[in-house]
Length: 634
Image (tube, rainbow, N blue to C red; front, side, top):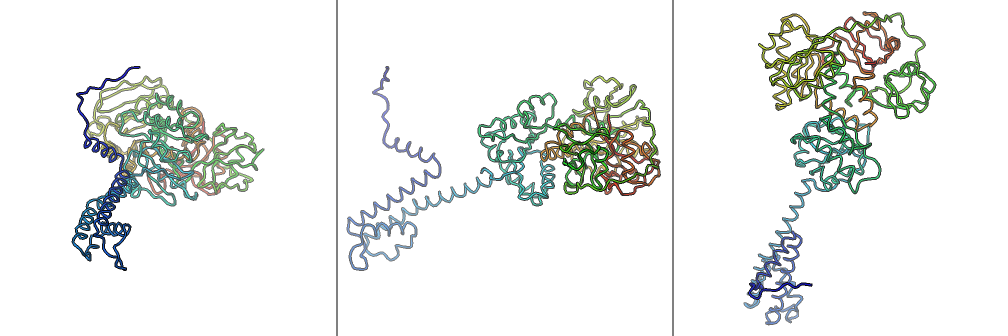
């Protein structure tokens, strides 16, 4: 065992240095230690003065003419430290001098004590304002993170909570609590929902507990937009949730957005069976492709995804056991059946003669789950109007894509799965030609030019294109990107008017507020990326079963939503009810869920002519150009 040899010449530490070091250590422990130190100093000072006054015989007389005791002197000293006016009636210069010292000591010591207590209290109030206390809500929706999608998500969840008592939304994000509350106050219609904000880093295990995830009903994770890799923050937050040492035993219901397909597998590894991930770029690309070929489709998707009108519900109807799927479609006047779930497996647009069981859950479109009520199945249908026509032969198509963003390759790939052999794509963008994917059915051309310039567009006349897609640039600030898109759309509209023809145009917008401005361009559809993603995250957070339904709907394999010419079902000009449309769709192995009237195609107040889940007994006159909205095999 060795010993440390002490150098005799080592500098000796003085008492003053030791005291100062001790004092600094106490002060570093925070306000409570400082308060305790000043309190002890005050008590010691008052007591010492009291002892001196009593010992030197300067104590004043009491009411019996005897000198006051030590306890009375100390009490009087304490009163003088708190109120300097107390010494106004003192007699005897010796006593007055000591009381003056006590009063001055009170000014410096006690006043400092009161000041520190006040500062500590103010600091605690400021800390509470910053939102650093754990919330005690239960059965709440927890949102982790903050980005432009959050307002849309909050608004949708507030709508979904209208029929729920004591509903709450808790937000934990790397933002100032007061600023978050101010934005929410200005832009959110809360209704009956309470919204609680907390400032913290969702990746930090301690901050994560602020939102009380163990008591949550569902958790939505939002990517930080100011990071180079937003998917990384999603994966880290999911990992922090699922592997938290204090997590609950029951599985979480987590919903999040992933931008890059390459990160999806890593996300699934950490999320396991507890998380559902929306692949944002692929989703928007598929919707863009589907919509460019079917005008009005984005309106249908928005209607199904938001909580403002009709949405998708799961319902058990044991009384329909033993009945066919087609009978189930006819059994609801105010709801549209689109499939069922059996043993957790989703089946959209199954064969009409499929027999239902008592445990099957019907997948229906309804305005509210309280309106999913069976009615009398009609004894007959107006089959005289049914006039099925053969589907037209698919021809090669020409598509014009104006602009560039990171979804371009996915759009080309998706489009290739729909078009016939011999189709063509022309891409016009300011960016140098990127590496584009190979296509089996399409010939791809690229031209470097500014698509928002009138001269660029006029070189394309007479516009021999079946579809036009205008992409919003993801390299520009959202408002600037939307402004470029608006300019392009205005030029296209003017060119179309001068040509005297309609152009099939689908445009991507980044800010939903700009859609109203863009409506003057009379484009067929507007894909508002952030809004659609926000709607889908909100829907899945309310019902995890919807994740599988959306996976089928937005895939290019299996059953999808189509808008098909009315002549494929009934005679144009016929006036009939929707039971007849159901029968006509059944004969084509399809499920009808609505229609679109071309006369209202540009009327926002009439949902651009789209009617999802119409009352089946209502009589409607269908004209040439109208569409029937169906679920059918791709």
